[in-house]
Image 1: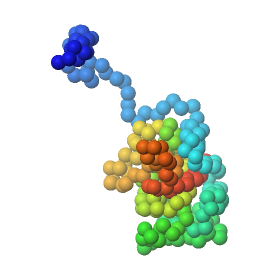
Image 2: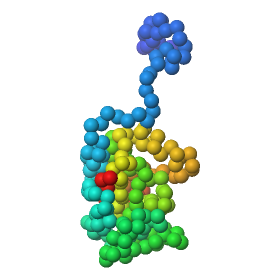
Image 3: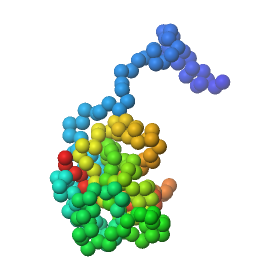
Image 4: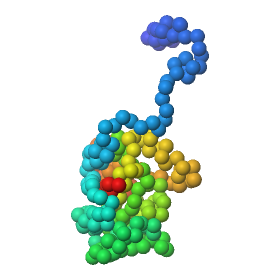
Length: 218
């Protein structure tokens, strides 16, 4: 044993000489509940700031203007075609179908090659977490299967203001029922991007390159 290691162990023994309880949980109880909200003053403002930090676009609109905002988002991203989940809100669907966009359905399921030829996708969302700017999809009917949000290059995602929570632990607690039911969960923090050891940034490797968030005020 080296002299340095002996010194480290000596100091540990000295520092813990008065500890008589072997169970750390009983020795140092911590009053903390997993999933408890943070004391964030303005959760929505925090969410918008964090999402925009990822170079995504966020627009805040009343609930009854979501359809128009979604169409504007698709146009802003340069999309000419879009795929829609079967359970997407009927008003949003009508607004998209009334536009000049080429609309695709995923019934029967489109192949990966077919999805790759479609510019964008529009979905709702399950839970969003302000502290990290993360949006979670549990792939309910208004979000569709995972491939829809992984293959097309542009994602317009509608986030209801009442589904935004303070941080990830609170978000996980909200997602717990879907997780227990075996639903997959997709986590989105901005457009897809990664970098190698030389910090060369590559976008669109494992999901849409562009994220446009419509925050629906309810």
